Image (cartoon, rainbow over all chains, first blue to last red; front, side, top):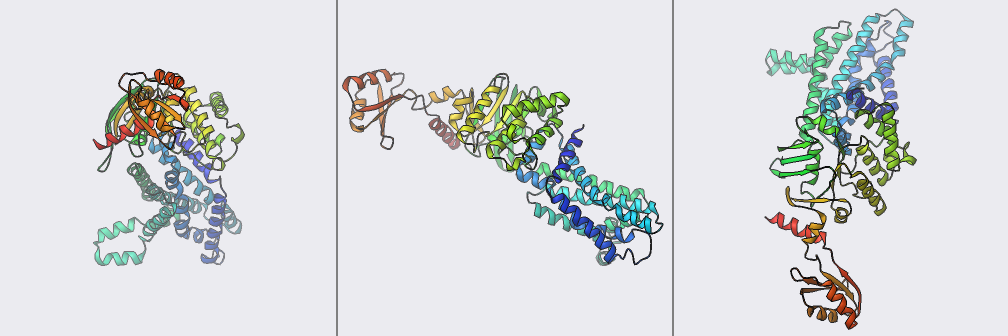
Length: 244
Length: 309
């Protein structure tokens, strides 16, 4: 078993050591359902697809994913166990990756638990299951992006609350980057190429294009690079803050 | 074998460890002493591979800590200050995690875990979450983790801090039991501990080594080394008597302890003449004691002059 797997397994098990994991699942499922049915009008639309369900995922993740990510390193630093972990024969990158993968798997489990919706629309009609599958992939990738950001922020502080708030703020910025309101304001005083740059950072734009069923390499690369960048940042921040 | 050369650590402008060099051979139990903030923990964290030195080198079992960190970490067992562990895990789960990450597998893993659980007396608590355990048990779990892979080098940062006397005794016995063929580095500010378990003591102040000697040698540096202390109801009489004894250079009275201490002139043995004269003259003395030297006094002298220089 590789060091990454061992660390990820321990980390994932620690999520389930307290009732918090189950509370999280319940909240996630209730909110996902409430958004899809109440606000998205899943039934009223009379269409057999999960678009209303997935459309709200960015906003659902905005608060729920930072809550998963906040403990990743802040708790480790607060209890001092970071010193134990990083003096075991593992590299720092293995530790960063292992903990991230555990958090990602945890959110993945929550996402997988929404499968009854998929079954429901198949029972009610004849949806494009390819699109739904792509949407799930896109949703998981987006969660990974949020988590990687949360991991880097969590490494910078001992306080989980601070980690949570800062992560939410950063993610909120990245969500809104593609919003017409933000882009309209940006156009007033930024050159067009910079506005395009801001727009291309938007989680929603990339997620929306994947959830149309088009798995474009650029969107995959966006999330892949985002995750890699912030995991690297996590490692750098850990190094910088070790002595504190 | 641990070799440390010119080890230096800076935090911004603060020089926490200043060009420290020493080496430790197997079989040695090295006590690391020093006031708070002297650089003990920083040095240990660098040996364990947690902090990166600003300058200098550390070699553990022939592996440079910076260029071959994994090989070095494999032969070290480390107990960080405060013995942090994953509180939500049980000792069984925690030790299993450590065994996996240290590459112990199959029968060997079960055997080693069984051995350390027995050695540290954790049988009763193996299935309880660690955060619900008493401080003593938590510390033992931390120690179990450090010795699980039977490391050649054991680095323990204040292993007995905050434990009750019985628990302290247990930890010391454990360290002595393991010391034979290993290198053990223990930091502490409990000086009696140095006498109890260490074969060598390094005193560090302001990031520099100010003394490196055996505990006995350190005691010999004390003003109290070979001094004689008498307990009595009539301090003045005893004081007057001691002043007249041959070889006594100085006498001091401790009214709180109700004792008088006679310090010998250089190279003079005064215990035998004093105890003989006390008997002959029938002085009101309840106790006559030969001082070995007081480590706390040596510690204060060394670290405070070290700080001033």
